[in-house]
Structures are given as C-alpha cells and as structure tokens.
Amino acid sequence: MKADSTAPVDPVCTEPLPGAALGGPVSHAVSRIARLHRIAAGKLLKGLGLYPGQELLMAHLWAGGAVRQSELIKAVDLDPSTVTKMLQRLDQAGHVRRCPDPDDRRAVLVEATEDSCALHASVREAWSVLEEHTLAGLDPAERTELARLLGKVEENLCRETAGCPGVAGPDRHEGPDRHEGPDGHEDPERPVPTA
Image (cartoon, rainbow, N blue to C red; front, side):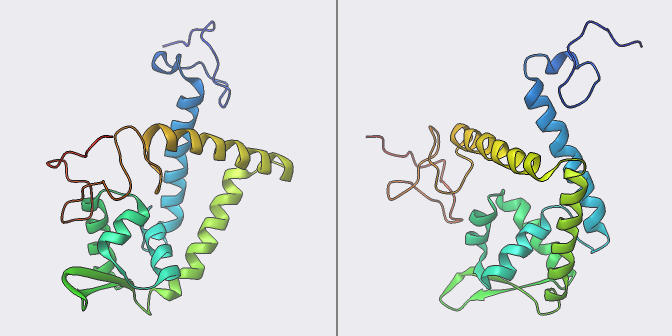
C-alpha cells in the first residue's frame, strides 16, 4: 500500500504518521523511542543474562544493600507481581537472596549476592554503550538540551499520572491519611478520607 504523500510527517522519522498518531506526533515518537530503547537494552543485557528492568532493580540493591521486598517494590515503582517474578528469576540465577526479615517475620528481605557484584560493572558498561547508541550524532549541547527537555516531559507525566515517588495526584494520596494494604500498596477496599 502506498503512503499518502499529504499525511503529516513525524518530526522524528520522515515517514507519514499512522492515523492513530495524528493527534499526538510527539507522544507517538516518545512511544516508539521507548519501545526501541527497551529492545536495544534487551540486546545488551541478554549477554549478561538479564532482562530489561532487572538491571534497574539490581542497581537499587547494589547501591542500598538489603531491603524489604515491599520497599523495593515502591523504589522501582513497578507492580508487585512484576517485581516478584523478576526476583524469582534473579534468585534462580544466583543474583539475589531472599530471606525473612528478623524484625518482622511477615516481611522478606532482598539483597544482592556477592556473585552478582561482578555484574555491576558490566551493567554500567552496557548502559554506557546504550547511551552512546541512543545519542549517536548528537553533539554535547544537543545531548544536554535533550536531557533538559526530557526532564520537563517527565515532570509533566509525573504530575499527570502521579507516577513518581513522593508525587500525589488526583487518584493517589501520599502521607498519613493514605490507607495501605498488607503489601504496602494502597488498599482499594478502604476509601481514603477527603478533606
């Protein structure tokens, strides 16, 4: 099928936008870039025996030491079932160790194993390679400007989605009147009082 030569052109690619993207060419570009970035990261991490996202979880453990699984879930801001599956895979690979918290038998502590520390430098190198591939062709000023603009976009999306730790949005409450379930996440069965 031949592309319509009158269709708007995406600012990132020089191909006509699909119909669904006509109302949001920047959002469409960000979506495509995020997908491609994840694929590229996956290729680099595969050689280390990791899946995308696992390296971020490991980086948190390498930096902070043993942490409760519920706190790790909050720190990486992922669904609890996703983090549990990641931890199962990392545990099977010998990268993490899970054990009962001596201060609270209901809680689980997670820590990076000594063997996983050998991965730390390799993960850092993989991210450096990914950074260079991602920013190839951009001069230092363009890289700085891109980082600044992406920071603004991130702030906008954090406000819109309340997706950043410590940011309360219209459907999410932080602080003492936030009701949590036993897993440390908001309990949908308990309404949050409104002022």
